[in-house]
Amino acid sequence: MLLKLLVAVHVLSAIVGIGPTFVMHLFLRGNQTAAQLRQSLDGMAIVERFPKVGGPLAVLSGILLVALYRYGSFGQLWLVGSLALFILVQIVVVGVAGRQLKPVMDWRRNAGGQSETVVPLQVEDALRRVGGTMWLAHGLALALFLLMILKPTATLW
Image (tube, rainbow, N blue to C red):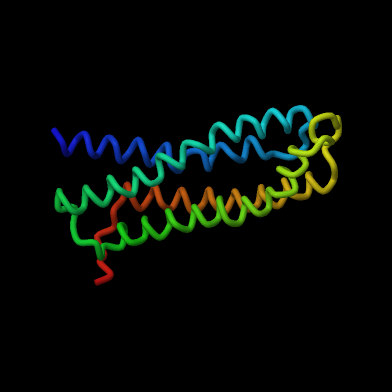
């Protein structure tokens, strides 16, 4: 019973922790009016809270599953690869995309971002750069899910 509960917590927290990565592209798309972009950024602020809880919970529950229920050694390719991919997704989304979003967030915070009807070119450029970065994050997250589902049997040590 506890195993099934822990698996359910792990799967749900993984979806909650990584899932918003796939939704961020919708919020950060280009060719929005200023009002639409402000609304998208407000929605993004709500959605980005989920990975802060789901991500660490997925890692913790995954470690517990391996440690308590003999899912194999910690040297398995799928386990090490999944942890590495999770960390890479976090670096790409928080570190790279977060830095690329700075002009967008600065625009949103200043008075112009509150009243402008047209999105400035600098903000559009930042959104375009973030879009490419989010495609990278999507690929990494997809690879992470595939490793977790397929669980290749190779071991690294």
